[in-house]
Image (tube, rainbow, N blue to C red; front, side, top):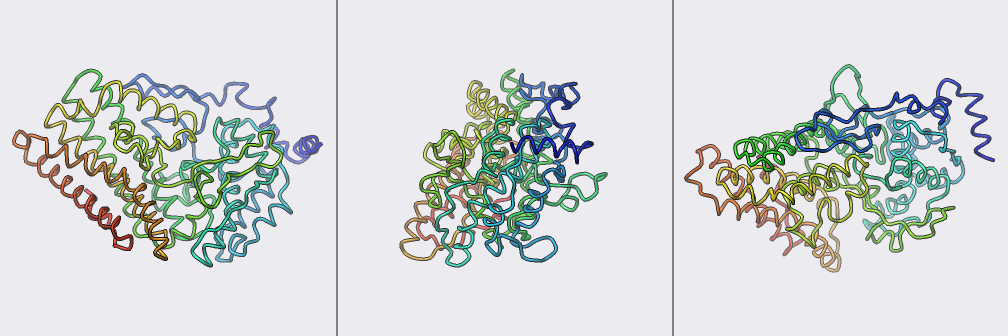
Length: 493
């Protein structure tokens, strides 16, 4: 019945907007939305399996969407847009929003219609709806935890049931995009920006978040920083494919050059994140809403979706810098997953399964190629390659350490009991970072430094020294959770 009313409403009030998104009028029927496989990825045989998706991996747009995200929903979704605008703790106009007063849940249950999204096939609108519904789902489920955290610095329990007016459209949209019905890193960051000046390129000063949880400066910087940094992932991807191709063809000079390109590109990524993610600040004010429902005390039995034929509880990972595809790419490319079978990895914990199909396929491809070619062992068979490998790992280490440092500072340490639990948590969270640091030290120690040029040898020594500092610093924190972590600026190269 609702679908009939919705269709009638669309026909009456939205003739120039939503009618063209129905299946009969959808541009895909005329192949207007077809996006040819990106020939720029010819270094290694791989093409985007879903070329019409908003997220296509390429050496043109990198991990960013091929078009700027849709920041205004069609007017049919007016109430959804209104609630999302009212949602942040601190709204854009400086007034307090629904999450500050704890009224979001009641507002959703009372006013949000169960929109019929079955007629929506346009990929750009689907991506926007996926962003909006997944963020609203996180806010609804974790609203009680945020309130509890602000009062006691403990999370308590989240809501266990996601109401049908969020759950049903979220599942429909997620299924159509071949993704999971949960908040994913690229959705919160890479598909959550708008340009202030559409004629100017993406930069820190020219973009702002579309949707927010807290509305604080730190959340703004988190989103804007990751988007601006991702502008350089075109070079990271191009260099990664160059590394694989050179190893495949046994071209040592090209392999070393590709490693240098990777280090340079990741250096640009880390430089932007260094500007935007300095210190913890009010990171904790929105960090609550990035928690997932998997292995979390807030959801000890998972989350149920109302009016879902599948009665199983849903358990999904949350969002963090380590869940960025940039982190996963470095882990796969340099075969780092074998270092920490028990640690917190940006891929082996299942986070790659939550990504958009093209991103997921690309990372699987890199992982398979790197394993097949033995990228790590190929790098270690030459002193010059070993040095360039150390420099590349230094950038990966900087990226991963920054994520951990922000997370560590956002979690309070309160009592001896908390310290014990926090110690175990830190041990798992830092194991991968510590193992990368040890790999850097081992690789540097095994190099024939005398055969290298002065510049490369000096830089490799510097990276190895910083890696040793990281390892000692994390070891000290594991012995004393209240110890101050090593400033990220001290390991940025």
